[in-house]
Image 1 (cartoon, one colour):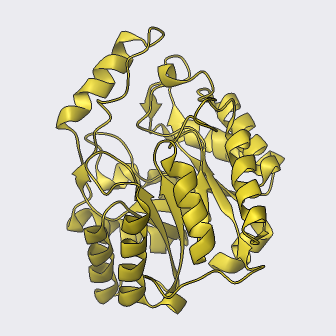
Image 2 (cartoon, helix red, strand yellow; image 1 turned 90 degrees about the horizontal axis):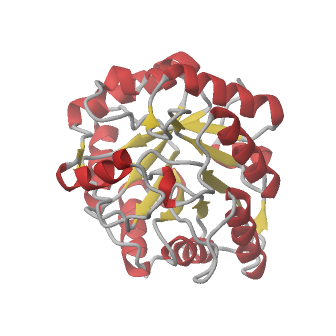
Length: 310
């Protein structure tokens, strides 16, 4: 067992993954598509208690995942005008994009934070059940992931580290399997990492580690061995239900922070599909209260993460 334990009353924040870049809108009517819908959903998640809103964008007409910089600018500006949440876009990009193209949202928009993926892996969503409301492109998109490898080579991560540092953007290091932590340690050895770091454990993707409590604890212990408990903050994201809230509860007990949102999970209970991102955040807030963690908003999260004023 990890030595880390949450002290009663210790602060905790949540990030909310608003729409995602691998899901398709036919999976749920709650998934926001247009820039206005994404902004509204992000603002609603913030009102429910989210300190960070994690952003992807979609083609407004079709709902297809997109990396269009104009859409990112519109959404980032829209959220910033209406709330003080930490706006955290993805640098995951799309199939076939160069690392410079993937990083444009960082180099051009210079957000406080953005996600930084720490290694390549198979990323399969072909197991998602086909629903009658899905468009043909959605079914093709899902099935096409049988051959999809999410590319994050060493050369990619070297360059991305430089671009984040130049932009003054704090990375949230996304680790989907334990080997990604050793990749991150390699970056640190090359002086491409600025401490303290923030690590997001993402468990439950087909092709990477499973959303199981002992796997989270193993990855946490490994991270603490590599970087020191004082050298990092961390949060956990479980993909699917009940993984999202099982990992949230575990993170709350072990001293971490939580991520929820429609990108990762579409249910608020076993019997009820979520109607909004805010509903998922509200459940996480309730878990924190039951486990005696002090919920904090964007100001508290910025202090914990050491985000510089911009």
